[in-house]
Each structure stands twice: as structure tokens, then as C-alpha cells.
Length: 134
Image (tube, rainbow, N blue to C red; front, side, top):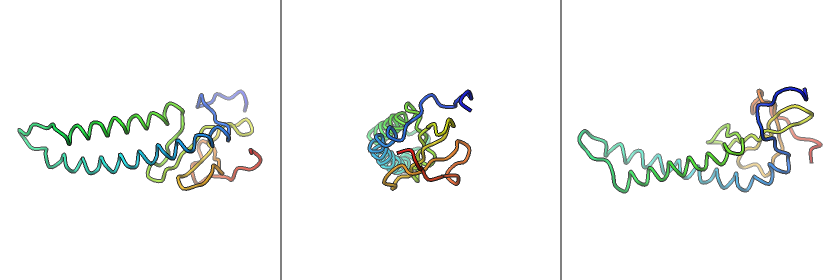
């Protein structure tokens, strides 16, 4: 399989992925807060939207800033090819190579460490415990 074309340019060692976990936790927390803020702002904006009403002011400016911040945080993952599989659960996959096969190191918010992996097409249900990669 070593000659097979890989889907991802970046592949993480277990150590590299572990070193990113503090940042990933922080980004997920910020994303969660921004999504919560945006839900509130969306409901405020809905009340303001009416024919002939000029939208602007604090609510719109705050909404725009929150969307830009959310985009910037999502780009942190995208730039590194870290996959957000379920934003509500905080389910994250890091592309990796195990035994010459392209796989994902799998981590879910709330887990202390990265302890699982799965094949690219297997998903969460196919998670297997990491052994021998320490």
C-alpha cells in the first residue's frame, strides 16, 4: 500500500496530534461559544428584518464579527487538515499513517488523550484502541 496515493498531505504522528490537543480544546470551546452567541444574534436579527427596515447597528456588527471569528477558528483546523467530524460532540480526526495505511487518529472532546484510530472510511463506529504507537 505504500505506493498508494494519499488523500491528505499532512499526516500526524501521535506525538504531534497530542501536542495540538490544548489548542484544539481551546478552539472547540471558542467555536461552541460563538455558535451559542450566533443563535442569540440570529433570533435578534429575525425580529429586525422587515420590509423597509434598514439593518445595521450593534446587532449586525456583532453578528458579522462573530461569523468572521468562527470562520477564522474553522480555518485553524482546515489549514492543518484536521477533520471536524461532529462539531457538537467535538469529534476530531487527525490524518495519520499506521502500518503504511492512511488512517485517522480519533479524539472526542472530553477524552483525556488520543487513544483511538480508525480507517478513513470506517468512521467513529470503526474506532480501535491505539496500541504500540507510544
